[in-house]
Length: 309
Image (cartoon, rainbow, N blue to C red; front, top):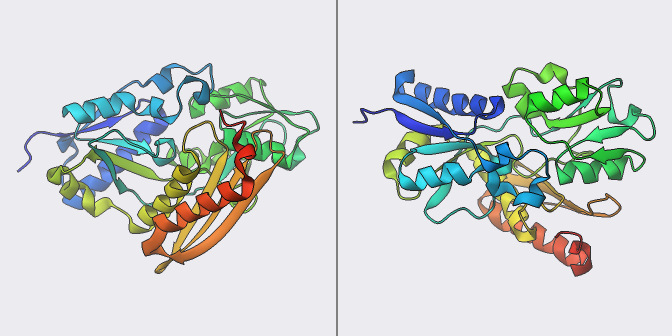
């Protein structure tokens, strides 16, 4: 019987903490355990500390996980809670993403300063975003808009917007909902018009492989629909690249025993894009995602990827 608290690793932003608390609360309920049986361990990551440069310039997605994964491997943490969209497609040896909580809203939210919708921004307006996918989609929809790099926590970005540094910005609607701040969104964009990042809206839990004690603890909170949808999206991502240097969008949904998938790759300036849609049995989620990624790479041709460096 477990006598010491389970140690849950997380980043320290308000959103990361909200996600860790959600995982803890679901585990408390699933196992009828008191809060004292879980200890939230906050670690600062390189991605949190360096906010003045794009992720692609300082190493990509792994910058948000390196410190947490080191303590997982050393046994100092029992498991770590992450935003699934921040996770590289290749993990350090000995670690696995074993668990996905039920996915929240996958859509992107636009927060306007003086207007409510992206389409209402005047010509030459400035929009802030750190995501290459969002930057490319914005430029594709509104090539007249200037897009600037915009990093930091949810609160930091909203403060910059209030200060008038930009005319609008984008955030994941799931993050706003988890913070109880979804009322700040002035427009929630449809998946059809603004395809989300692979795994957006899903919380994942990373643990050591072959740690049956933790696997048994986490199993009751694992959501099958999210597992299969995210597996498809991450397979698509892995087939194309999977780093923060690539404008890639993807979204899968499960319907009974079937799964539908939509994916897109874009030039960073939004001038060119290729998209794909498919469906199949959810038991073949990984195969469907990989097929879609391979098919888009083939259709786009090697020259399409020259800017992805």
